[in-house]
Image 1 (tube, one colour):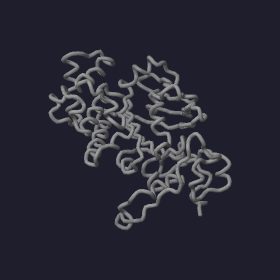
Image 2 (cartoon, helix red, strand yellow):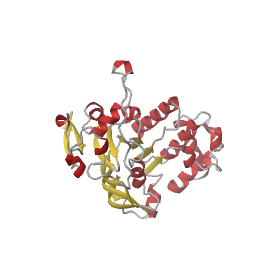
Image 3 (cartoon, rainbow, N blue to C red):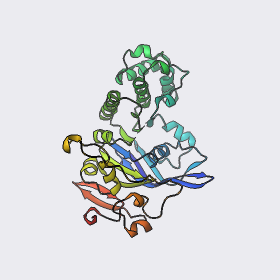
Image 4 (spheres, one colour):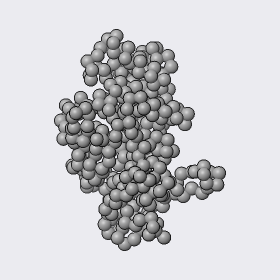
Length: 333
């Protein structure tokens, strides 16, 4: 049984310009000890999907209007889309934790690091005083903070960006969550620190059996981290499957286009021509009819302009694979 099952999730924003379908019928799952990467261009709905799982979409203007978010923990199964706010507060930071893109938005600049970490333990595990401080110190050491004992008394501005992100990861892992959601956790960091943070998340996944939903637009990160990949465009999932199948046998033209837009070391010494994707992503408030990718797609046909394609279930290299496209690879010119 999957740890998290998202089925037909619909999150809409009600604005003066109309209804924005930021997430429109998204379905995926995350197993224990598995990394599922949700990828796509900016504005595709990745972050709204992750915020929806934790019910953090601001209301108004946003609201989950349909679908289920089934979270399996222990012998219990809960639909988080229907859970009360009190119940969600008990789950956030305890059974499901989140790492945000900018650690300065996650850390209180006026509170010492130790106080912020201890607050998590006090709220969720009723730990205080020396026992809580000891746990916080152990976790800071586990995530590789040098001089961890002294850092407990520092304020966030006294730490580097990489160290702040490690603190955020430590905070997320303090209560040994079942599910970790990481929303672009390395975007603002230099490449050396990025690699360290990714290794840290992978190491904790292996040691703790945490399921990870990793949000990114960086396909290099996907290649390193993912077990499975879900490709998102204009609020919908257009393809999902194993990381090997996505990179070696992409079935959707958008996935193909994403892969053509990144350098590869196995072609012409990595000096091959990169291909930009024509056009721009559509506004989620004004989606074109049919498949939303058709204005940018080199394979588009009349049927692509008329209706959104049904999902096709495939098997590639022994793994389940889904794609939503009218024109299969063998029919593309």
